Image (cartoon, rainbow, N blue to C red; front, side, top):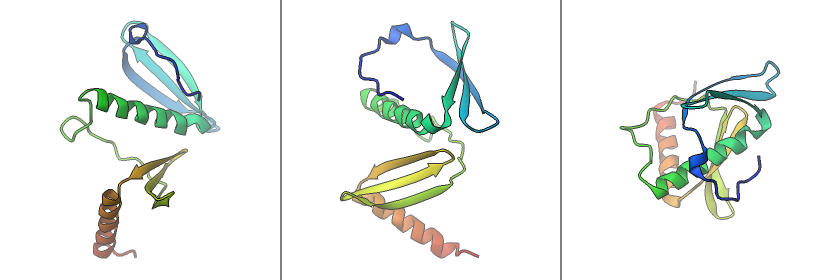
Length: 134
């Protein structure tokens, strides 16, 4: 997906009211139906290989929205559906802590402070000690 570099007028957009989706039989595309308040729906087919880029874009824009306003998710306003995790790793890359998460066709990497890495490491050790593998 191309990286948006120009300013976009928000007045030109319809408010999204509902999104549904599916996957093609061969798994090559993610199908989305985006319902709008004024203009009906728009059907989109996103190649599965581009899913990671769309997720990253949404997370970056969500971070920008949180910085520009008070739109951060909190436990009072946000209920997350647990996602099936296919892989996770914690490591150091170029002297920076990195958490990599694999969920289906998307692999996302998050930079972490040393304090966050230590906290995650302690949590993993505590969990492992209290629930040893069978």
